[in-house]
Image (tube, rainbow, N blue to C red; front, side, top):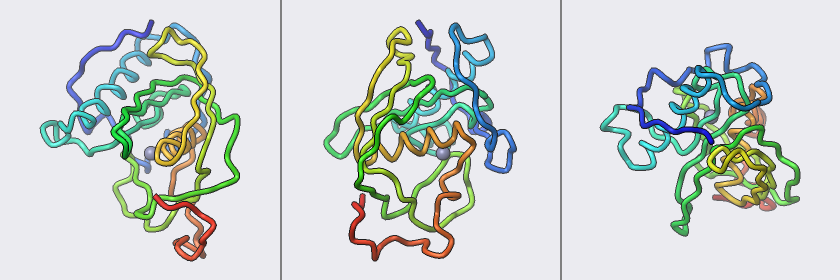
Length: 191
Ligand SMILES: [Zn+2]
């Protein structure tokens, strides 16, 4: 079982997108994690949990709902997501080796565009995502057991954004340079 530690989050933990680490492909996770990766994963969880508890200003960190391992300098396929959706349902997942195994035909986007803890510069535009995804992974909050997640809307967007990080892809690379805004496209679901 992955042992969680309660750490005081710091903005220094998060790498900026100018760091070449963020454009590398991550490696598959094998267990147990080494002590360095274990610390970095604990940073991921402590950082996002502090944001979930609305303690971002207390620690002087940028608020976010999810983070991927390369953003904290870990080259393994690990993501952490923790937020409440519009129905008040809490989503909390620490996933190793996540893989999208199915997607909806329907696509969607966030009307205000996406953001990223590693990106401080503004990149205006919409990112087209699948409205639903099915993800298989190992659940690090449940003895690393295999898990299948069916996600929709913001949760699905979030999974796609974080899983992209594991391939070295940042959200703004998916903004169409010629058609930055997708408003005219009525076939897309807007959040
Ligand atoms: Zn990001």
